[in-house]
Every structure is written in structure tokens, then in C-alpha cells.
Image 1 (cartoon, rainbow, N blue to C red):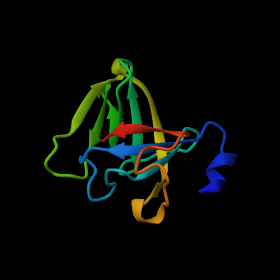
Image 2: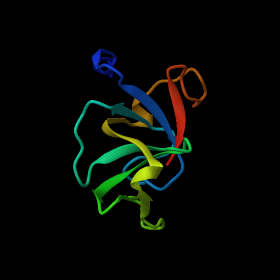
Image 3: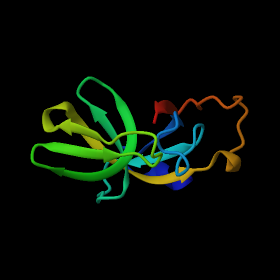
Length: 117
């Protein structure tokens, strides 16, 4: 995914956790573009004011709160008040673990961070 290097402020995160399975599996990387528009049903990366980061499905942002859903039906939706949300960025690509060759034994490369789902 070399084109992500040309997108200002874009970044890559390594997924951990199972809330987005089967869409995004643990160990896979997501590419995040803070400049890209997102819509209901899109995958997004959300950071809260207390520093918690999560990848979820964006459902809506209205009436003073944001609703985030999970792909895995074993998890409940998340409702966050406006004042708890630091930012929401669009996920623009998912890199499947099987397509990636890693010499780091499955650990996150130097240019990304582990992110709980």
C-alpha cells in the first residue's frame, strides 16, 4: 500500500481484538485517512478524549452523540456523547494478514500501532 505514503496525515494501525471479525481480523492492518469523508456503514477509527482508540462501523452522529457498531454480533453498540469524542477518521483500506510478509513475527511494524477492536 505505497500510495498511503502520499496521503497527508494518513497512518496504519494493526488490529487486535474480535469486535470487527469477520470483516477485520486480529493481526490485519487498517489504513486510516483523516482527510477522507465517511458515511453511515463505513469503518472508522475513533479516538476518545481519554485516549481510547477503536475501529468500528459508523452508524450516526446526532442528538449529541455518536453511535458505533461492531461487525461481530457478540458486542453491543457503543454510544458516546459528543464531548467524549476527540476525532473520527475514515478507514480507507484493510490489508489482509495473508498478503503481508513480516519478518517481525506478527508484531506491528515500526510505522504502525496495535489497536484494540
